Image 1 (cartoon, rainbow, N blue to C red):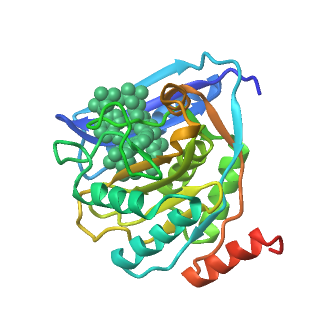
Image 2: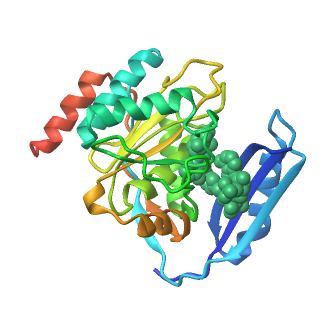
Image 3: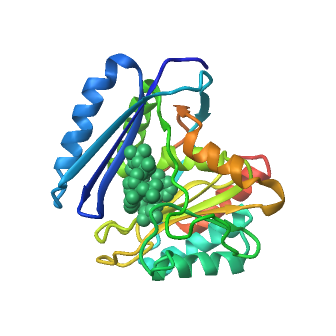
Length: 278
Ligand code: COA
Ligand code: AMP
């Protein structure tokens, strides 16, 4: 797909603290309204930023990759303990080892940066051994240059609203996760937010889709982060980082969004799919 698109990125901060960030890929005539919406969003937060930085770049790559969004489902685990157990089960189904899952959850729980803080991006972890392989453990790797196409964006808003997921975070996280799981060598992603009052998180993989959990941490907990699990034999660090950070991806179609279901219902639906009768 060839299209003249602009990457618009907003980052709001207060002193050295990150307050919020957002990004879009839009055509020239949508630049003004997009910037306006991003600034309004940055100023609507409880924590008032003392700096809002908006960057606009023409996308140099003439070729744009288009992807179909992962299917979405919520598993109704009632608290963080149950949520993490269910998320671990989903990650194992995606091909991540029990050891790597335990190590990943431990890092996210205690603060994955060597300073003990949250990282500024994601860990990259060997999905078999749990070894961390990202080049900078304070920073991690940040995914950028992704968005919904106009049509798919409208469609997903309706679909997510219909299953009670109207929060803008789900829309954005779903686009990010769709880009991540199509990266060369990535098996799965685990994420929960570092916002103290946002307890939800997800596991994403091509095999399982985007599986959301209302609780992956307790309310008030300021720790969070992302882990991208990789198959060591099938990935090259430089190509992975280049894809995640720089290659533009538009999510141009939606998948299926299902209503909340129990863990048992979800796993039996996966089994039915893999047996060929959905
Ligand atoms: N947490 C903490 N610091 C952050 C940050 C984050 N999430 N994102 C950016 N920063 C700070 C860092 O200090 C960074 O320097 P570093 O590269 O040494 O870490 C600095 O801002 C510049 O970041 P950069 O990514 O180069 O800025 P940008 O203007 O190109 O893009 C974002 C900023 C926030 C838009 C982009 O990084 C991003 O996260 N995009 C995805 C947004 C999104 O849709 N997220 C969905 C989450 S549900
Ligand atoms: P958030 O979903 O914005 O609450 O972010 C949760 C965590 O994900 C942050 O603490 C970072 O560690 C990580 N993160 C934030 N933005 C990105 C990104 N663009 N790519 C990869 N990881 C990110």
